[in-house]
Amino acid sequence: MTDETMALRGLLEKSAEASFLREMIGFAAHRLMELDAEGACGAGHGERSADRVN
Image 1 (cartoon, rainbow, N blue to C red):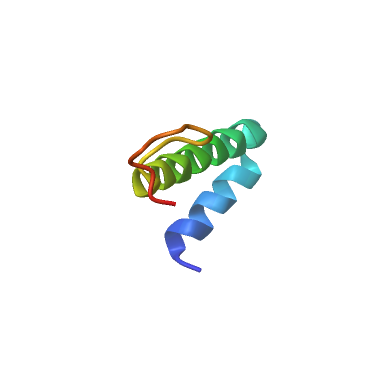
Image 2 (image 1 turned 120 degrees about the vertical axis):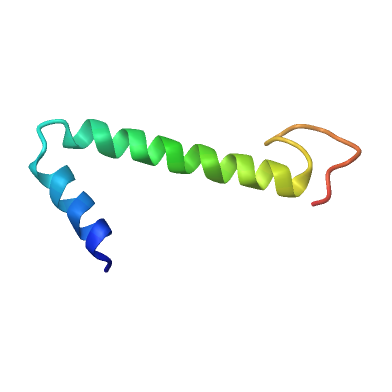
């Protein structure tokens, strides 16, 4: 594990707002993955599109 990852993990474990930060990071990661998948497919989740490639 990198030093930056270990430092972030240590900060999250020590912080009183650790659960809030985990939620924020999880939300951001999930949204970034959704946007990447939408870009690759040519349409959003559940969206009908003639340009959709999957």
